[in-house]
Amino acid sequence: MKRHRHQRPLPAALAAAALALAGGCRSAAPPPRPATPSAGEVRSVDIGRIARVQEAHPYVIVQCVSLPSIGEAARVYRKGHLAGKLRVCGPFESPFVAAEIVQGRPRVGDRVTVDRRLGGAAAEEKKETEHAGMDETRSR
Image (tube, rainbow, N blue to C red):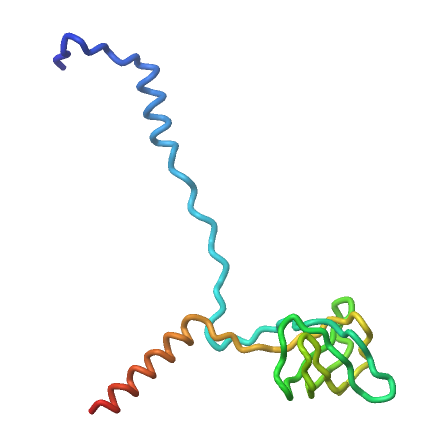
């Protein structure tokens, strides 16, 4: 190998270190991404907590972080165990909603959940595809 006049030889130790660093810089594979829910999957979602129990009538007032729909079935949990079942009947006065006690004996502070069908990106794509197909049909 021909060296130019101003070029100095690279010390062997420095060359070995550079090679070791270059080979060892590869990062490990990225951690696996959490599974994304598929379109239409049903999940239990916390909607709030029992704010008041009406003893004289079989209903409760739920303070919601996510408002349910009229007629929607809900479950009541206390310390991780099922404590009752409700049916949302209204009226709504955000963030509160009334619900009929269907089963159990809910208490103030109990957690309220409902089952929600997740839409997800796949459902949106399907809607867009169906909508586009309808537009094509109309234009014919």
